[in-house]
Image (cartoon, rainbow, N blue to C red; front, top):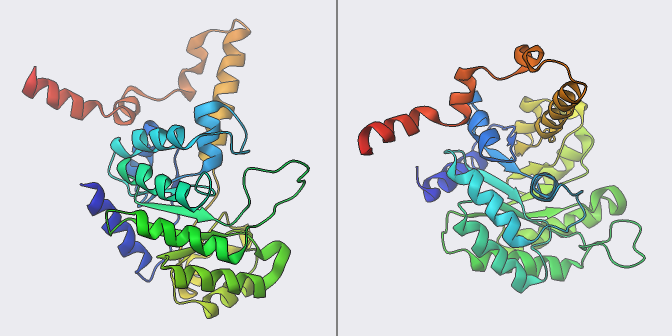
Length: 285
């Protein structure tokens, strides 16, 4: 499946009537396992990329080229359409254009550009947001920079928790006028908020990590939500498993005791795409 075909598939999800939960992926193995589990979309978050590439927290110390290379590794490992959190586009509107170019070339299907002022400035102790005009300019720049018209640009806003619904409506309007393919909302916590968002835009809605009370795909779908994130638990689970296995081995306990918690040979073959490599070996070597 070509990257354009994946992007077209992602667009079909956005234009559909259902709501999907994407798989939070962080490397080629996780993406391949997510695809095998039946997920339709992969999601690479900026926070998870920072963790896997640098072992650093989500404070925007990861560079664009590092992020794009990790996305490239994930995209080439399977066929899942990959959406990514491109933070603030790594700078101003011109930097956003570079971001779109790099991530499009990496095989990404969709990206979000947010309105948070990043990285955190000197003396800044809470989230701050760029102006509506600057946000609109970034989204327009992202739309203009894509060379594949199937590539999806999502404007992302986080103003709801601190500035309320009127400010949110203004950000949505900015995304609409800038030509965004959808709007990504963070900080949505209630059914009433979801319904209000649905009433203010015809654009497809994507939600950041939703609370338990919003884990109702029928309700979300009926209110225009096409994709809703479940958080990034797979990476946290993987970290816990690593810590437990290292502690076990450092204490001098037998590696064989970990066998019941280890991947089977069959699962390892799936994770590593062994069947495909065996077929290539048979054909070409």
